[in-house]
Amino acid sequence: MSVSETPLSGTIVSDHVVPARAPWSAVVRCGDMLRLIDLEGQQAIDFLCFNAADPSERYHAPNTIKVPCNIYLSKGSILRSVEANPMMTIVEDTCGRHDTIFGCCSFAVDRVRYGTANDECCQRNFERELDRHGLGPEHVVPNVNFFMSVPVSEDGTAQITDSRSKPGDYVTLRADMDVLCVLSNCPQELNPASGSNGPTPIRATVFRPD
Image 1 (cartoon, rainbow, N blue to C red):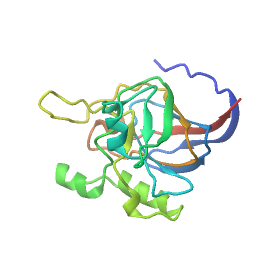
Image 2: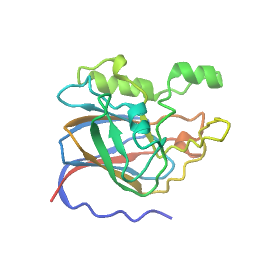
Image 3: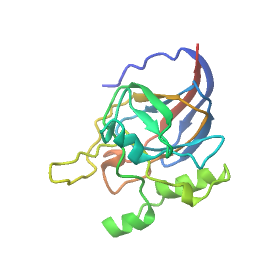
Image 4: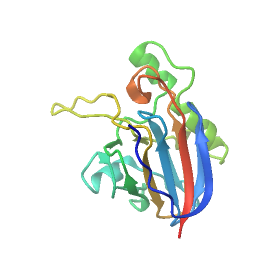
């Protein structure tokens, strides 16, 4: 069963269907919204954001976790920068429990874990997209994984399991500063990050509220 999407209220700035395995980026101005829609369900979206005026201020996973003392993101969660400033706030979320700890897939780590690699990886997607904005591989830091399920047991064991996201699930983030948003529509096929049917398209819509 698909999720009923709340209609957008405002002016569309950009609206793109991001193909399976592909990257995407956009500058989202302070106060504008970014909605990420999992069109077919169980598709991980690897996500980073940077201060558009000063990319050295970027998303920082530990600060995002430490302030609320929670490793999962959901409605009301704030993505914080290396300076602990609010960068984006999740204002709508139909899925919840988005991952902050497992980072992105890469050819190197997949070969270590699985003895092989996919044709594409989020690390390379990030590098390609960041290059378009004059940023290098050093800017690929531990990222948010929207719609990816990473339960953690009492003994600290963590693993990627089947996502809970359904077709049409979405998150809407408000920009709390001008941010450069960069994502990789995860190409992973060696674990459940992209569901049993493999990578699928997503939709990224930037809009300005009324």
